[in-house]
Length: 245
Ligand code: SAM
Image (cartoon, rainbow, N blue to C red; front, side, top):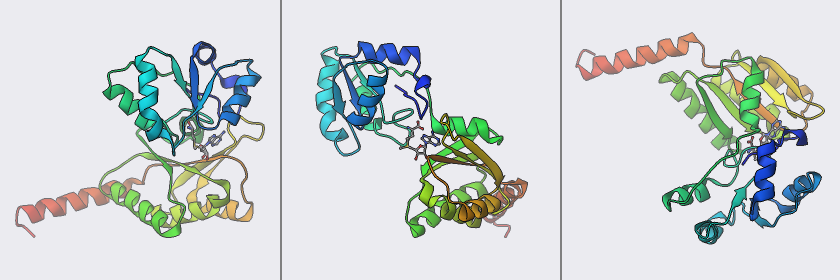
């Protein structure tokens, strides 16, 4: 179930009643979720479930679900599974034929997309790029290759503030500096800000004025000529396959 990404007022009434009615709440960091629950006056058992113990804990959690306990899964913020733990547990519960429900709510990627002014669909959620330069450039090249092959989607990425400028620079280099983009920062919080512009101009801005807080990058689809290149590639492949080239 989803919890706020900054503004505590974004916890839905259904989320609150689900938390109140749970036998236990599975959470990434008991201090973060404990503080959120305390602000809402909810007292419930918290069980840590994070990247490092998800596989170990899964059999125990499945046994509790099979015994008809109601367990709620949350992450530190937003929607679990989205760049957060939970996928392996949900997959195992589905495979075991146990009932799985979701309480929808805040998600930084979708909120940034709605604020970006960029085409909302189709979109590709990439999450975090690798933090090291080489693997990051390789991942960007892979995205560009997918665009050349016909992917025509807005791209959504999460990034840490201290890497924002260099990531924008790498994106400008790999995807094209003119690509329209938006950087959504501190959404739902006091210093919420959305800055829109080309990848090159955003890279220059954040190189000069380092960003703080939590950040989502949205990039508009590749320009028309990418689709043209994809068609050309396809035509070449067809020609090769039919022995014309
Ligand atoms: N599960 C979460 C969701 O539903 O969005 C995302 C968890 S991921 C570990 C955390 C990243 O999400 C942050 O580093 C940032 O990129 C993005 N994020 C979370 N809250 C945000 C906010 N209020 N404003 C901008 N980005 C945010």
